[in-house]
Image (cartoon, rainbow, N blue to C red):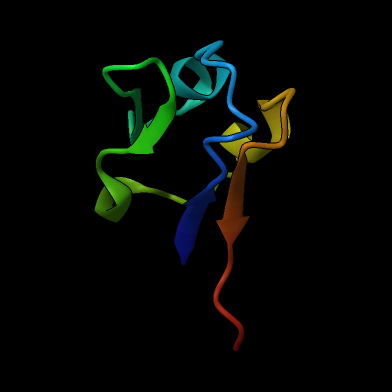
Length: 63
């Protein structure tokens, strides 16, 4: 599983950061989304679901 971000779409609202139960995401020094602790991700998809700008995607492993 991998988190993919599109910082060009990110407006820095922080909604994804607030809804992440494991605090995987952070805003960087310019206020754009960054994956800080990908190993802690539980694949819940809340970041992708809540992002109003389609700036983050949960890439699930194919089995």
